Length: 639
Figure 1 (cartoon, rainbow, N blue to C red):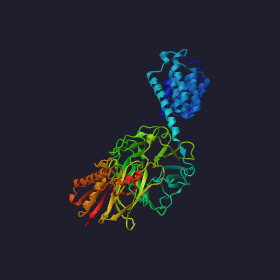
Figure 2: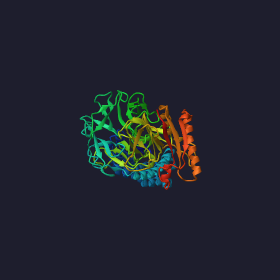
Figure 3: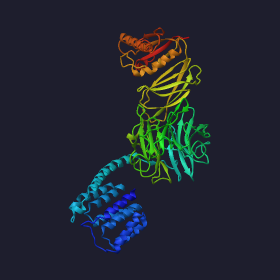
Figure 4: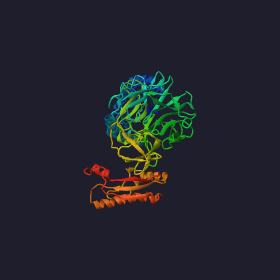
């Protein structure tokens, strides 16, 4: 494309004779050299064209059109020094023709020399005052005037982008990760303690691992331990870390399976990766299926595929794990996928920010990085280009953002590396950041025996009442968003449920939130605190965030039809005893009323208010008073 543009530029300039441009010099032999140079330029024989135009200039050193052609030839050769001098000579020998200034300024812009480009644009504006200027022949036409205006705006935008690029602080990951070979497809598990990538050595791909030594240092990388690396190629990995296991999802090509490339996984056991396993026919097809990205909770998979039913080329597809099995993948749709290639997806741990590469959406290079966000209704936004600086004309692949949205990582062939493609890290502009994520690490135990037991675990975002996680497990690892308000319920047949409420603060620490849910077998006089029942201050109407927890109470009453319970309300000691007594009674009655509305017989329910008479903590502190304000459930009768 650039060659065609340069050819067009050269044609326009060569066809133009300015009133103040020099026309002196030889007429026959000199023109022959010029025509020869132009012909070779059109045939993309730039080296031979450079020799011919040099002869033409030696024969006629004052002719501006020769310098214009020399500029186009040496731009194509990547010889900026000669091209810039040629552009300067065009203006030197023809200072009237306005279009010459545009061609010079636009080339300076492409070289990121914005101050010099602006000075040449000033020459464009002043050209009409030049002696010998002929408005009929020298004035820029409407097309060039439009281009010069766009160039002014582009320079202003480029200056802003230059500031952004400087703020990115792009850094090579250094010799512990990079080598003279090619390194690419960076990633980590959610805890951020292991760096995983692909290295290509002598046409053979393997996984390499590096481990965090401290906040800024990584250990010398080593081949993945165990059996995941083979004499064949393995690449494009994504790591899920759970409470019981780590699982590596990756691509294997031309080694059996269902198609040319399939998705596989391997589990970590005793520090070693086991033999690979195909993800099966629900995920893989007879087409090219590759580049997996697994969600932080391990239940969503996004990958690239050339299978039928897409928009064309390679498309992005999504699958969900339901009851331990993967659903049939769905195409992410026409807003994200194009007739070109969309690939290299990375679904961030927040579960709603997706980064990917595309050739089909408008960008700066052959492949550009884009992002989309999923709203509360599950709809994806339109793709947004990550901008110049992150995207270049070079080969940039494999975009990854850490769990806490502090650093982004990608592979690039840009200059200054250790050889081949290297992995880089950078700061991510705020507008392109996902939500920072920490994670909840938990287990369920029998309160008496202290042994782990499988239970129904449900994590709910109380702002939206959306279920974030739900499964039957004895251990769990769940990505969580700092600042959100969560309810965690653990329940099992024959046991009274465990209720927790927590609001994780924003933190850059690597330490997860840890919870041990203790379940106790149901018995008479057993009491459980309902930690997710909410009222406005000094009010007794239930807030909608309370309904999730109350529905858990409804279920346990339905599952145990002979159970009778007392709902008790408690307050702190702020205010009069009479007011607190009345408030606690009304709050307990509100809970009783909700249960009756859900079909529970009032004969099985008693509501009581105790005011501040049964504190569980000191009323001398804010924390103690907050702990004393509560709703409890007591088992009065059980079959």
